[in-house]
Length: 156
Image (cartoon, rainbow, N blue to C red):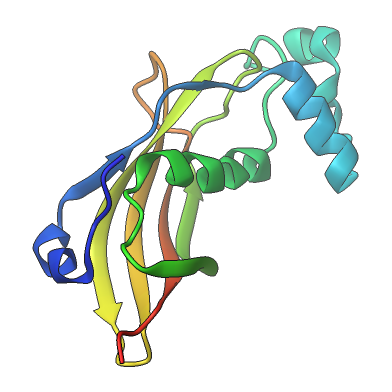
């Protein structure tokens, strides 16, 4: 993957900056997330009941599981910033869960660089408009406006 320089950032604002590969959301992944978060709601874990009692036809991933996948999908999709020593999750301006992700479905993230604040401190605050697509679905799993902070070594 190529890198992006601070000088390239202004020209990238408003454009798609990364697109991840498809990733399968498996039942073991959903089960592990339930264990990690202590969220054992049956719509995530009981395939038989979820098939019988929901319109989903089976279990679905936790919304926060789909949101948490953005970290790894961003790592594989967004070009690293030259000179960055660390990246920090700064938060979200908006998150909307648009459609459930069924167990076994594949998702991918598309990242658009909406804005960037290049600070004299050597930090870059980036604002991404993110869409987490579900393969063969009209509606995305989620949309979000995500803020990240990159710490860049300053040349003295």
